[in-house]
Image 1 (tube, rainbow, N blue to C red):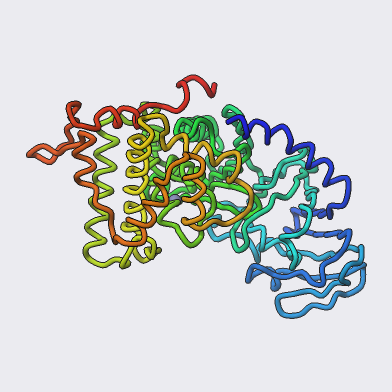
Image 2 (tube, rainbow, N blue to C red):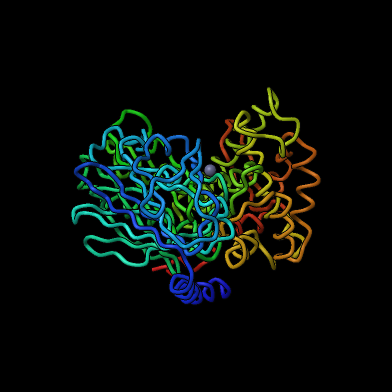
Length: 468
Ligand SMILES: [Zn+2]
């Protein structure tokens, strides 16, 4: 926690230095009546080319100029004058790049960053540019980048580093904006309401409650600045038909919410605590069993720690998940957990969740209760989250060993993730005092050898009122 507070103080200073000194400048002028973005990207020192990282970008672009002259455009890239100062300009037709998730939303737009901007080929070594959106006064903007300033007709951001090939979203239109503060963290909520403009209060209460429950897992919300997009739809499906974490341009979470469901149904849904729990770990593109597994575990543990679920219900949900995962792994699965992917969803999500529980128990045992999984995850906040890099499970587990001064995580990686298709969990549950009676209901046994460990799992890493 100390380290993270320090970061929050230092960042604005660094940002000021970089933007005054040598950062590039992007201006995006939105002509809402024509639904055109006029982009002007001025470089202090141009790269040798900019590239289209999204399939739709090139076809949506027109009027492409370098220093007001027609630019050399090739398939997928535009040649620039390497090392020179100068401006690239182009127009983007919004309709051609708008996301399909917004069919019901008329004039509102949801566009991937990579579908709006041609990106320098040497992006990873560049100082992050400032981006100024100019827009009519009824239009509002939401991006994952760091918000610098918002006036009626201009919204300014500092871009954030982002892992390669990760998506980030820009929302544009008559958004309902709200800033939710949770301790040191700022959650920038943007609702795309469609026909449901009266839902803002309920939605912001829902977001705050679920984000706060995840803050109780790791002694604070995992990131100091995050974009949250809620798209309301008129549908017949689930309460939250879709949720995803985006790592492009900084961290963002996107929810598609069924506007016809009740507030009670929304509060009982697991999607928001799951997606916010995904933010407890950094981007792990080739080890999704770890991020999805830890999120599946914490979607229940976070709610247990804050009383949104009682102990029995939380364990019933976890045990049901473990059983689903182990059944599907027994039928058809990747040979070992490490190799599981989208084709083995249940194995991947719930196998990883068992690893999280095993890590918690082993940590408490090895350190005689001095260190918990909450401490380990909290230790990631200062060093390793929101830095725009990708991790492997091996790297992250070795970092967690360093933080906890144990070898719990590397052991689990070697013994379980690399060797087993699904980790054994039944004896662990028995030791914790999580049992099933004859009719299949969960019974908690306080005489079990690790019952005290189970109590620690249910306790919060923050005082319950600490975020308000
Ligand atoms: Zn997830």
